[in-house]
Image (cartoon, rainbow, N blue to C red):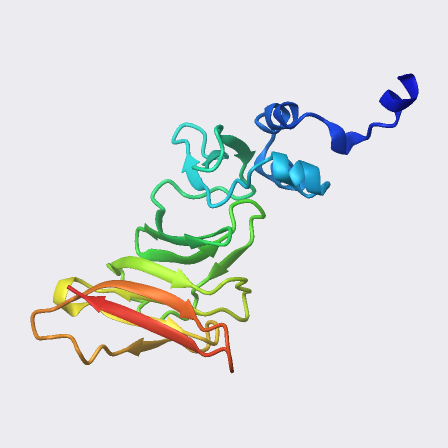
Length: 207
């Protein structure tokens, strides 16, 4: 009996005990624990996609809420998001942030866990002090020199989609010829084809 007990490894821990321990971990530790072995991965559900909740009174910390798990995961942010920053889109761990401060504009992508940011430094409407951005979408795995993104800018009937597939060197406005005189752009969706040639398509819907 003693020999059988001593041969049990970490992979034989009860699933309910593993789940209880995982509930007290940060988002990084939670992800690493799931990668230990097949048994642990099966016992601990994936935490993503998660909702990032930032506390107004402590902007260094955030909670990650996921519908797949029963608890909220706490994490200290590597970067401090400004008070007036507005989230315009998110995906794959990145957040699109627009932060108008006086006559300057901070606009781009931020990874709140690593602190890496990718400013949209050559965005064509960057000089407009009252730039209004309603949504940003972007491709996975962006880098400061190579990213694909699209943004809806402007007001009501004057909205346009500004996009790039070449980082900050390729921003341009895209037309939507099917829009009527009184229509406006309501949404923009990023879609990447998975087959032959890896073509990318940008779509806009009208309201």
